[in-house]
Image (cartoon, rainbow, N blue to C red; front, side, top):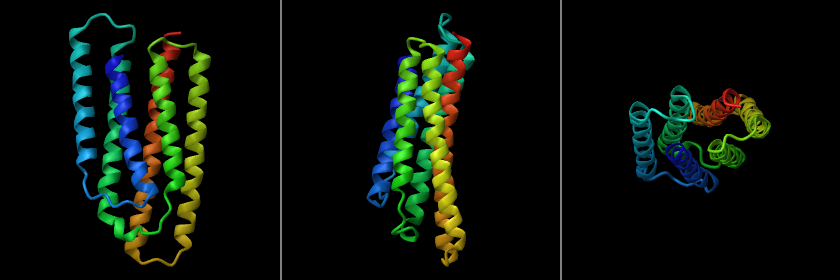
Length: 195
């Protein structure tokens, strides 16, 4: 569980770093933090996989642990991908307000952190369903924000480069929230199987 919690904490740190950049329209000069986070997450994933091979006794099924750790890795990897793309097109998205997505993304990873910490004690299914419902509500709100932004984007008179840059970043932010939903679904499934 310590390794899974480490994966979740790494995802939270990485997302917080990204959202702080989005809130202040910061230029991503240095991707070292995101690249290092992806490497740390990959190392944790490998360590989990090795533990699953070596350690026979675990309260959770090996496949569930592996699925959860892989889903957390994908979340960090998608965050890194967003940061790379944002850095490439930052000059084309000056003035674009990403603060609503940043708030929703932080809310989603905070819920995930809570879900994974609770997994240690295998909480009642009702508790996990409550957290997963909150996560799905957050994901629905994020989808509505992206839908509105994309709708407005198609009616804006923008140069092609600005249009494509915004659309690409909106899609990646939606994918980040979807990755959070995927992790929440796996955690809920684990609790359901073990309740």
